[in-house]
Length: 175
Image (cartoon, rainbow, N blue to C red):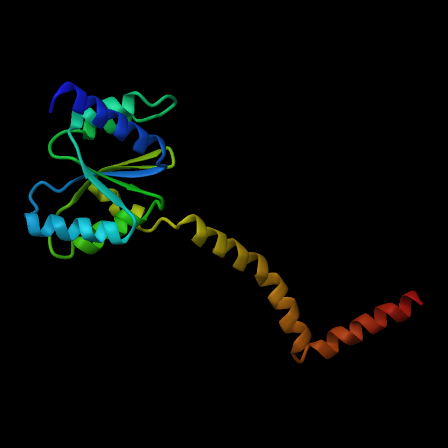
């Protein structure tokens, strides 16, 4: 790689890191060509970009991003490194877990999730259990609907006569 190609790769990585709230740093060094192609296909089908790059170029790209807090990731940049860029925080962890049913790789070196850094392969279960923004919104909506559902079911059930009686008694007191 000449200097021009390196600068282009740094610029590309910088743009990807800047535009991504979620990325994972992995080690897939011992995977065969067949297995790495299978892993890339899984990533592609899940809208995850998997990219292998040199550690020094990754570090230089991260260092050029203003306001980024990536220092905790720098020690992870050794040995073969692949980066997974995604729009959903837990998707790469789920892909890695699914793929690792057949082996130990790819190993998770670390992850950057919305300004939080997770270091080590032992964080994979935590990352896989993270809920997406849409899942959290769904949970909140169902929690907000729960009291209303309880009131409606109470009004429709056998206790509706009791409630109607109470409302009638209260209105007669006022009147």
